Length: 236
Length: 236
Image (cartoon, rainbow over all chains, first blue to last red; front, top):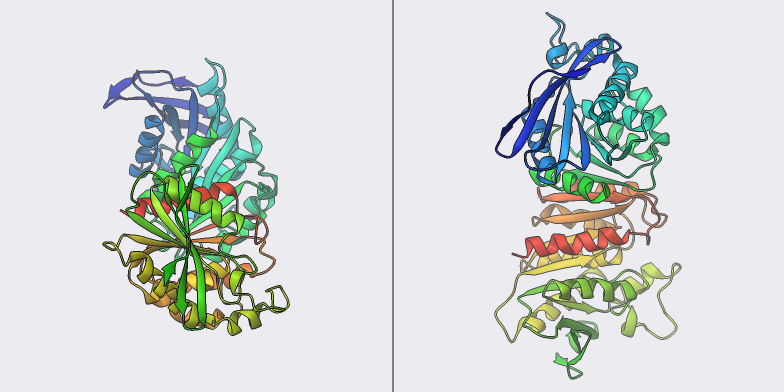
């Protein structure tokens, strides 16, 4: 586990790459921090299916988080980004297979816990939150349940669906921290009913569902902004 | 239609009573305004079933609205508050009957439009919103559809249910303004599924559903505060 680049600062944001020794091999990641002060809070960003740690919208959320004085960290998910197996880039047809071969639920929990260990290794642990929709929830719900350093989460666009839908349904009752859960009312990928089923079984009594009209990837910008404000309020 | 008391100011809020000539008889109302400046925006407050224009939580929302520089106005709903017919105080058993005898959907739309005429009669019309849950939505959804002076609404805790459930389902597609719609996930009075059905058919493409765990009357305080902040943002 090590930094693989020197920190570079642009527009007030310091960016630095790292790599983690995951159970299935190296996991590349990136950290964004305020350029002018130490970050006293940490936000883990889980990207969606077929995207990666540097997807545009992950960068946007990272920028919002840094604007609130947080460090934001993203890694590539199983079989995604720099972890793509040649000839097996993730798509609609092979998503289940890519997720499983890349390590699945167990693997990604280990990857993220190792990431958290690494990022926090040289300092006092900080209040930590999770932000991740769609595959970002396939990763983040299990990680948040497994690691009590994470004390608040933004999840959504996921439900009793996909390669780890049963894992999610089984683990959700153990999720006790505050959660904001986003649903797209006209989701053409993960059916609304599957999302509502997952929200239903989340164990937290501080869970709030926000639903907006539109397709899977059409989460309104105001909802994204508000989701980071929500995390800001809870990461005391 | 006239003011029935002189304005009285306490804790920075000026309160004044009025009465409207409704189609079914006099409709008493109350107005709350900032004590120190003219209110440039107006918020109509619809109380819930068995409550009235001076219910504690209506007073709380009025206080929040005044804090944002708005005037807030409430009237008694059909068969409620000062409009109770002796021996027919609204309760669980007779709610349908009280609502209908008090004037029902048609009557309450006329009552509220007359209220708006009165309150705005001596000034330039102001940006106007609606806030009303449960019976406050039974009133507010039809009023908002009928009167285009109302340009944003907070609704919820209501659905395809109750004495005017069919009216609501029929009118909802005509509701085109921004709406925040609150749902209580464990609503023991208006079933969650009935609420989701109503949200589904709301015509606005700027509609957002917020759902929280708990019973009908257990809307979290943070959600009430946020609902008035939402109206504040839209009442430009």
